[in-house]
Length: 95
Image (cartoon, rainbow, N blue to C red):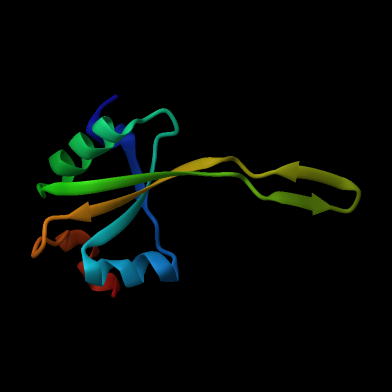
């Protein structure tokens, strides 16, 4: 997988945006990516130094419409901690 295939998109929840002040950024990543691949991809795409990565498997919610029910797709989320003083400029305007 290439770096752009591993990092899918940033998470824009209220909790994720609050973490930007502490140099913690949240991204949805490829479901089969591991910590090493995520670290290399973030360092390559955004040109920063990664200190720590937490990976979270997010189950899809069950949604129903009348008597029919289904499940949204599951995702993998990565919380990336950068070196102190480093920022991702592309995501800075969100706070």
